[in-house]
Structures are given as structure tokens and as C-alpha cells.
Length: 293
Image (cartoon, rainbow, N blue to C red):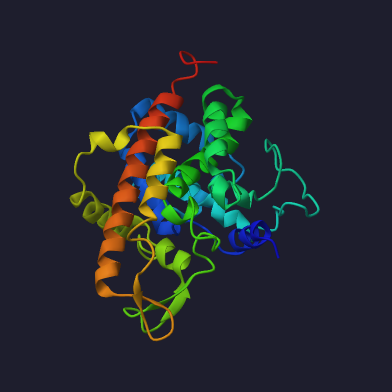
């Protein structure tokens, strides 16, 4: 089977790039970064989204507007198992009001280098979604915002930006010496879960966020750059510290030292993603009566 087909199968079946906790942490950092005007615009757009009531019911934040914002950030992964949506090449499902289409767009979550087949649309889709958020009509903006929140975070998960022809780590099994309940897993699954348990919300998420922020330095410097630069930055991390180098009894071994380094890298990437997302939304979500049309 050609490499490109194998790659697409791996990504379509398993790659999610950070679990729910990771995406909520990035969104929470962005919310803190956003101006009152940007928050107001984001809340108005999410209220117009067909799944607003679901997010409102699920959120656990003290501020429901923030809670909905955090839940919306997980939506592009949530629809993977939602029967209202369909996979590429399958029979289309009925449109929801205001939606351009109902495809799951699993290939939006990653971007492989040209040398590895060039599969995935993560970087180019982010650029297009930014244009929709700034200049699109109201329905397009409501559709674009959850995707935008999600994909900025995905861009900062190194395994979603390249790999060793292993489907972004989905085809790379590791032995986890620190997890006796699940001693074998894909490298991608290991990285997805580094932010914390996927169910984290409310006070527990706030506590994890506080611990994360205790580790940050040079906060302003983390906001700079652009999609292309952030993509290169994430790919550069793949050279060291993303793949374990110690051999276990059967597979590459996640040691205590590797796990500590990986968690530090993951925290750094979550912080970068959150600050960059917030700063970018401050530029895009200007009040419509005074902003670009």
C-alpha cells in the first residue's frame, strides 16, 4: 500500500492532537489573553452555532461564556463520532442551518512535509479560517470559530506536523514504563494525553491551568510569529525529545526522564498555542461595526 494511503488511514482513524483537556487549556489561555470586545464577539458567534446548547450544558466554568468557548475548542474532534457528519468520500448528510457542509474534514488536523507526501491541510486551512473570521458572513464565522480554536492547538502538537512516515506517531508503538494499566500504546496517543485527563473541566481544569502558567517564561515572546513559522517550530521538535530513544523489552521505552522532558515540551507548546491564539483572535474579532468587512 503506498505510503500516502497508509498515512491517511492512520490520521483518519486515530490522530486527534491533544485530548479534550489540552484543547480546553489552550482555549482558556486564549480567553485570558482576549480583549472584552473579542470575547463578546466570540460569544455571539458561538451562540449562533447549532451546537451552542450542547456546549452550554457540558461546560463547568464559573463564567458560562468562557465555558462554552472552551467546549467549542473540542468540537472538531467531537464530530468524528457524530452521525450528523460524514467522512470524505461517503454519502453527505443533511445540512445544519448555516453550515457550508457536514464533512468531518479529518485531513484538516495535520500537515505533513512535502518530503513525506505532503498530506493534510492544517496550515492552509488555518489561513482560510482566519479570513472567514475576519471578513466572512455571520454563518461562516460561527462555523469557522470552533475549527480555528482547535487547529491552532493542533498546529502546536509536534506529531501533527510531521514524523517518520508513521502516520504522525499513530503507527509507532511504545512501551510505557510508568503506566502499568496501559503499558503499550501508540506514541501519538501518549502525546495526546500529556495535558491531563480528557474530562478535565471546571475547578480541576483551572488548577491544571494555574500549574501550567507557573512554568511559563517570556510570555510576550510566545505570541510572535505566523502559521508557517509555528509549523516549522513544531516540526523542529521532532528531531529530539518527541520519540523515545531507549529500547524496552519489546518496543521503544517511555522512561521517567523521557516522560519528564516530553511533559515540559507539551506544556511549552500549550502555552505558546494559547497565547498565540488569544493574540490572533484579538486581531480578527474586532467589533463588526468598526472592523473590516
